[in-house]
Image (tube, rainbow, N blue to C red; front, top):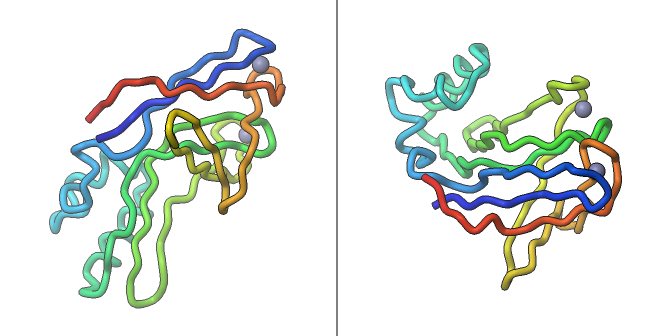
Length: 150
Ligand SMILES: [Zn+2]
Ligand SMILES: [Zn+2]
């Protein structure tokens, strides 16, 4: 079941809801099925899909993650909810990689967790500030949007 968070800026009128986590359609068996027909809905890049189909032929291939994650651009502070996947296989690991559609800088994922009502944002285990995409202020608050989706 997915969840939503709302990011709100205290210094301007920026406010946006992001849908994160795992919906019903995000089950790896659904997306990475043998004929690859569902992939195009989740992975827009054609070359990437081709590569993944090849990887999935590897009998050792294992999908480690398949979910919507929050991404941020460190250059222009833009925030996105995007499909994240990670597949381990014989020759390594393939992960979703995105660039910012605003400035083409590589995006970084933020781990958002709701722990007893407190929302924690982390990158590689370190707590991070989420800067406002509109005005750049670090005075943003992150609220549990309190609705599930699938
Ligand atoms: Zn950017
Ligand atoms: Zn702002």
